[in-house]
Amino acid sequence: MSPAMSPPAASERLRTVFISDLHLGFRGCQAAYLLDFLTQLKTDQLVLVGDIIDLWSLKRSLYWPIAHQAVVKQVLKLAREGTKVIYVPGNHDEECRELCGAQLADIEIRRDYIHETADGRRFLVLHGDDFDAAVTFSAALKCLGEWLYDGMLLLGRGVAALRRRLGFGYWSLASWVKQQVPDARRYIDRFERAAAHAARKHGLDGVICGHIHRPGIRDIEGIRYCNDGDWVEHCTALIEDRGGALTLIEWAARAGMPTLPVRAGVSPEPAAELDSAA
Ligand SMILES: [Mn+2]
Image (cartoon, rainbow, N blue to C red; front, side, top):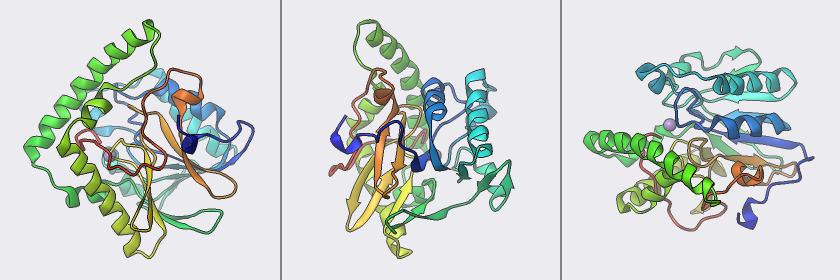
């Protein structure tokens, strides 16, 4: 884990936590890590940045194990106990966008919103599928990508189990493969630039999003780009401390669980990702 990702002390109450791409209802969701994270979480605000419940996957096949239900219950418990919870639906849960503006069980549902940090910086917060149009790929490639991605996640689980048995750290096959694909690198770079551009257009200091399953914080022509990652491959959250500093934490490493080669923190390099399952 790089110094940029060092989490604050466990006793410190955070100001804001951003998580996205939980994909509850999808087999790839790392619900055990997620539940562990949410159970220990102490924060004034929790922002759910989309793809929380994977309705696409649930429509294909109903999958709702007890661990996924426990995650939902824990979020509701946090809301009940005083954490301000804001839910910004993504594309996999876009049906929930019809509820934007509503308040359900202490959870505020928003299409997007502007977050002001403790040190006065203003960030556009949205899931990120809004930028898909700016990074067009053919439908065929998208379809193939999605199919490969699902397969890779399953294969990756086998590899991960083997690595655990051999005493190696957690490692994402899907994430590694995607980094090797030049097209995916170009895709992510275009996505990040489109996101930064949207923030600039609104006269803001930065953007906070998810969607591409690629955690990272970087500056793009003076705009702070933050991606909180996902809970399918990376198990990451973007956190704001009491002073307004934004950092990424990788929960698998924090929890003392085997770690993965995350290239997070401030990364000067464009990252790699297919948007298929994003
Ligand atoms: Mn998405």
